[in-house]
Amino acid sequence: MATEIPFILDTLYAHHGRMEYEGPDDLLGVLVRTILSQQTTRHNCTRAFDNLIDTYYGDWARIQRAPLEDIEEVIAVAGLAGQKARRIQAALQRLDEERGEHSLEFLRQMPVDEARDYLTSFKGVGPKTAAFTLMYAAGMSAFPMDTHILRIAKRLGWIDESTSSGQAHRLMEERIPAEEHYSAHMVLVRHGRAICHARNPDCHACPIRAQCPSAQSA
Ligand code: SF4
Image 1: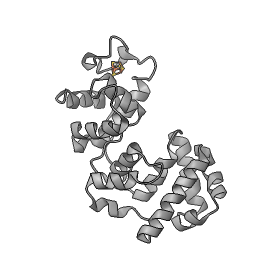
Image 2 (image 1 turned 90 degrees about the horizontal axis):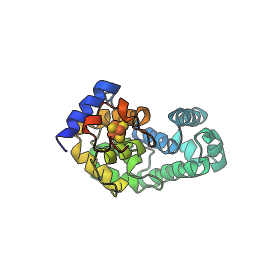
Image 3 (image 1 turned 120 degrees about the vertical axis):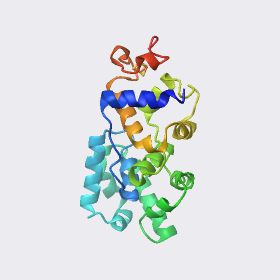
């Protein structure tokens, strides 16, 4: 199976296109954006993040001290605004108290597991949010599993049906070469959106049908 993964990824790159990692980004900004992205579309997440940054001039200290209901209003388009506003302000407050600055750049110096443990110690930051932040902002060898990737990995037999999200992150991180994490994440999300749907996957149009043990019954 491990030898199949590179072949399957190459086939998916050929079919959907390959996106390359575009370089580092601000870790705290990516974390906040990823919190906003939970259970909403990318479009609404971007609108909420841009509203937040524009309203407070990109000043994390002002965002931390603003009334909660003001933050909720500014990010309302992303949904779950109360919960997300509380989590963002709590993260900013903790960084302020612990480190005296609103920055996560120190994570770049940590081993990936230590950085992941630090991020998941924030309320509302699970394995997917932590892995995406570390992969996207710092190019670290973390592999975020969203619902599309979890579904595809189970259908392909890369992980068992009973594998938890936390276990799946670590298993797939080991099985997919570190230099492929970003491109593999992006192409698997595309594949899940375009072909390997949760309901009624379009197996006849699937370029990896011959390698998929779920193709006949899906
Ligand atoms: S063959 Fe069907 S179930 Fe398997 S990966 Fe392709 S679309 Fe998904």
